[in-house]
Amino acid sequence: MFERSYLIKPFFMLFVAMLPMLITGCALSAYAGQSAYARQSGSMVPVSSNLGGFSVMMPANPQYTTRPIKTVSGHWVTQHVYSVESPDGRYAYFVAYNDYPYALDGEALNRACQGQADGMRGRIMRQENVSISGYSGRVVRIEGNDFIGVSQVVIVGRRLYQVMFVMPKNANVPSEASRFLNSFEIRA
Image (cartoon, rainbow, N blue to C red; front, side, top):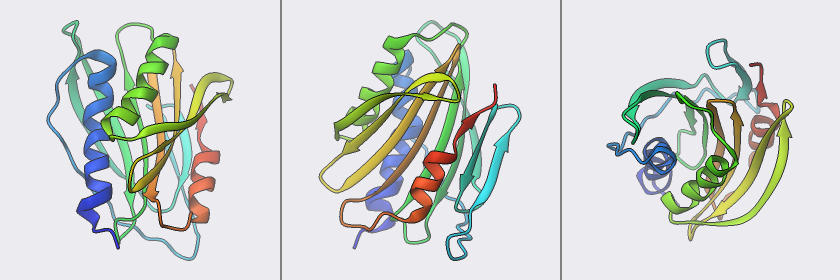
């Protein structure tokens, strides 16, 4: 059995800290967060952000955090993270977005996907170009020695969205995982 600190918290730290660094070249300290998991036999909670321009279904009310990030060009951006972790630490659900002072391109999408895998010390097992709410994005399956992560990365002008579910390799995929990933919509 995985302990909470073994799987999810290190991933969350990498998710919050590494991806913006890999895209913008900035250095961040690690951050770990948790939220209450009020799961009631598969029920899902609608989560929407007018500021973030998205909606999604999550298995509980997420913890919302922000943190300033300094880019290589000297600009500051704010990372917004909505996260839910199961009580046993085996499952984690994340939605994050950053707004940059410049438009992002396809290369930023490539760096984001590879940056997630590198930061988690995993490898991309499968990736597919997709359209999410009419915007170009990518769905990526990342595997490490002990975990599986499924990520959706979407760029909308100057905004980078990341939607990710992570679990141990030996766990059963909960029904909430596909409901979470399939429910993400951009309302920009």
